[in-house]
Image (cartoon, rainbow, N blue to C red; front, side, top):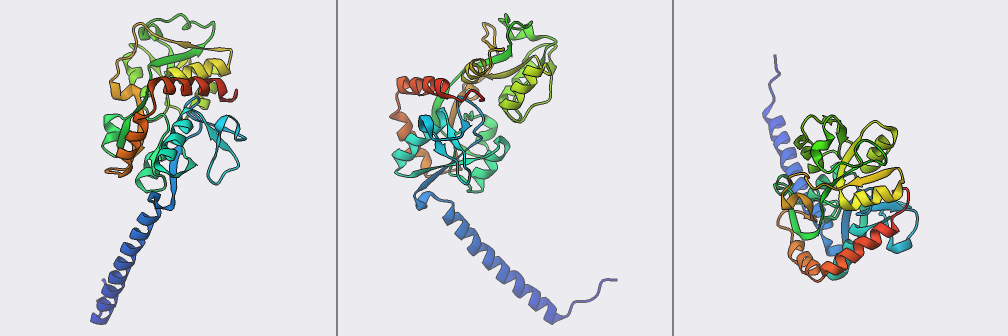
Length: 282
């Protein structure tokens, strides 16, 4: 039988709840204040493992930016775009290395101000966060072993029976279903893991975007990128890449203004340099 609570105990409990509620509100406001860019920084989240969009390196060569709380540096196309945005905002760029699955939570919790990580503004993601205008657009490809059965593929249907995968929680993984009779393998956490799986023969290929496909084939002479004449059906949002921002962020309009000043020619040059400068291990 539950014991009766005295009136004094009830009043005491209500007082604790009231004080706790007030404290929580104050704490929440403090956290919110800390998570704005008023401190003069622009905190950008990326996984630093998706060359040539972003990667990890050991020094500041080729424009690498030190990773927050880490001895390593981040480089790549996303980092160069982030630098231009930070400059346009008049803020100091801070790179926060974050696992892919942790990017949205980091943004919505205020740990970072933006996601600049080769992320597509898909309809599903737009339900949780906002996006800037696009800063890159790419086509889907397949990365396979050179000299293997799938190097000469021209259609995605040529991969019938093939063991194919893609990165976890990306639209790359969902489009595999468009291949009839494919042996769809479990999604993998990141691209280095998929390259290891391809090298070992665990998979026959993985779905990627053209820049990463060029990166993979450049880093490993045993890999080749397959482009299709009969490829995956995608929406423009799927193949575009934009900056992820918190809902109704005051940064969105400002970032769009910065992006509008980066010409298409400059974007292509930045990507070409990223592909050329990527570390071999990436």
